[in-house]
Image (cartoon, rainbow, N blue to C red; front, side, top):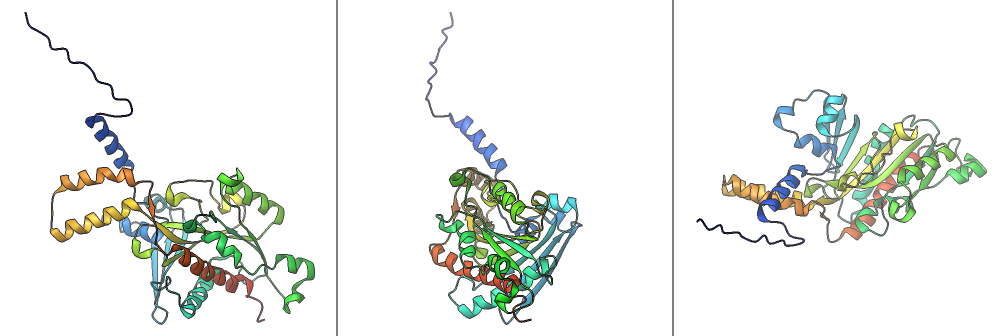
Length: 335
């Protein structure tokens, strides 16, 4: 008679066996994406087979004196929008390598260039209009405080013009600038889009300018890049926290979005370091690389920023606010 060895099943609550864990990690790895809010990086990351994708135009300008590179990515078709994961529209990226440095003259030049790009995307920029500036983000989280700090430094004129007219500024025309800091849903219990839509319905602005902190793909663009787009914005999309979008379609007015990447996905940093290691050592251990990538899922909700982010946010928020002030606050002052 054959003796059957009946092994006992051991259940370990809260633990998975090695096979189950590997499968789940692989599934997570399949959903892993290198997150970026920058259209320029999205264009750079598409494969060579899609590099000749129709419907995407790229224009590049380099201002040698200021060391500022301006790249305009125009997405003209739905196919191109799906391939890049970005809505159709115009994306202007300003790369200023020294933007993190405390050089007031250099930041003044960046503000002037930013003002030119804002006026290039703002409809009816030569006409007197009402503009609502919305500063998105959480003031208590330093890397996310860009929007609120930009609002703090704006040249607000709506209440003065409505009360005293343009004569208060000794000019015949003056834009009415108002500002809003909607906060985050954890504090207000309301979606940002709900708050903004309510204010838009009550104040009837001609256009919106929305400022938010972004997520970058490359560490070298951290706090050194400004993106301006006419497609609006989806708050929190860069860190996987999707909220209702602020767009022309949802609000009924043109929306210009301005953002600076202040965080980088931790998994992206690890992936880049691993790629450089494999290239330098000329390694072809694909299994080794895949094994390491299985751990990316553990980093998928971690974001990194610079150690001096508090000083950088204070500096670049003033630069952005000055760009907006020059573009729409001082447009008619000299006339």
